[in-house]
Image (cartoon, rainbow, N blue to C red; front, top):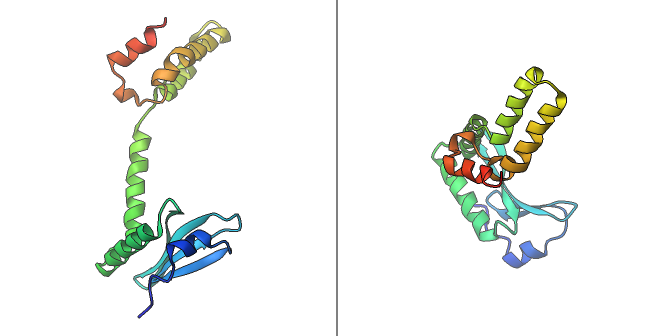
Length: 159
């Protein structure tokens, strides 16, 4: 049986030497040349060695890293590859983000598509600067699907 819980909180705080410092049962504290630290878990799934980050130290404490590692090892014993689950969850988030269109992005696309029909380049610049000045700070980063009348009123109020 591999001895776990080799590190103490004090040791984790004081470690400065670059490299991997083992806590046991596949949990490592990685210290970089620059002195930053992060938790790494090594596990095997279907005969394949896997390494994954569990978060930066001290944001993720020693106790939290051990809890995360235990959860991942439990999933592996149940036949679940936690890295694959994590990657699938990240893919879902990316897909959802790709569906959102911010007001700034929509305004830019609108201006680009209508630029050729305007009388001058100055007209396009006026559109751009006006939208940036008034709409940008209030709704620029919002998903256009979430913009409501109250938001538009806030944009138009100073005008």
